[in-house]
Length: 142
Image 1 (cartoon, rainbow, N blue to C red):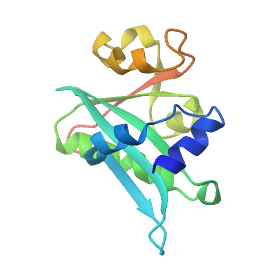
Image 2: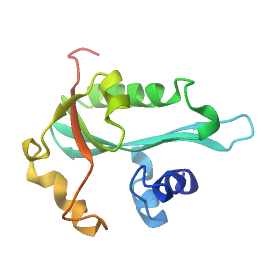
Image 3: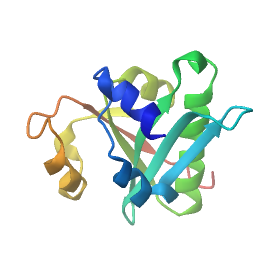
């Protein structure tokens, strides 16, 4: 997961993740592996508050783009959020079009609660964040 996420981070397509951060949040992750066991896609659903979770670290190996893996991982996050009773998810991304296809809606970053900015202080782009904010309202009974 670390290599996959940081490959895209190296291209400026997502923010890097430290190996320690992945281990500390390992239970947040959904992973797709190929037949040999190699991680080909991953995403994390990080709970921010009782009513809000962040979809983060979504990465799909380039050989698997356009195969529905990203959408399947986002759907796993929706299902997990629903099962936990968390009614809203958000993401900060450089690829808003993908998330809009999954039902996310663009919002101003200032509409998100201040609590979500806690980890931003360690970001190399802070305070000049150039990611786009989107939210997704989890359907009741999903």
